Amino acid sequence: EKYLPDLTAGKYLAAFCLTEPGAGSDAASVVTKAIKSTDGSHYVLNGNKIWISNGGIADLFTVFAKTLVHDEKSGTQKEKVSAFIVERKFGGVTSGPPEKKD
Image (cartoon, rainbow, N blue to C red; front, side, top):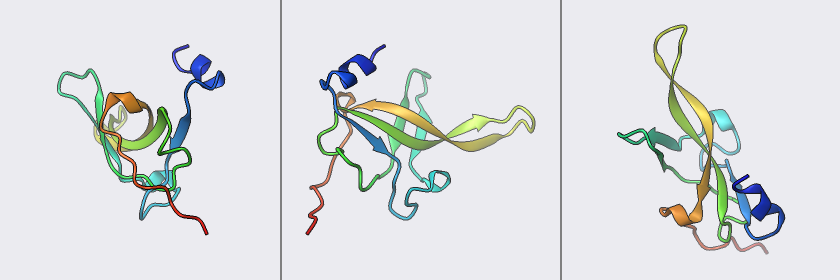
């Protein structure tokens, strides 16, 4: 309800952010981390993505990152890949120059 109407109307542009240096498009190999804030209200994502179509102009990003998840069976913490919706206006999103394609 929050994003789809603006995306389908062309008001927002989106980008899919999976590919990373050294990991390619292998989701299990991403090194971008998402850490839950101390008050539990949000996550802080840290990492680098490459070759993101619309990355320099998108308003909305689906970003894949590793999170710590409690494993009920073993009682331990395990890393799992999660997808996050990130709005450019949240801040902290930076883009490099467009890649020159000859």
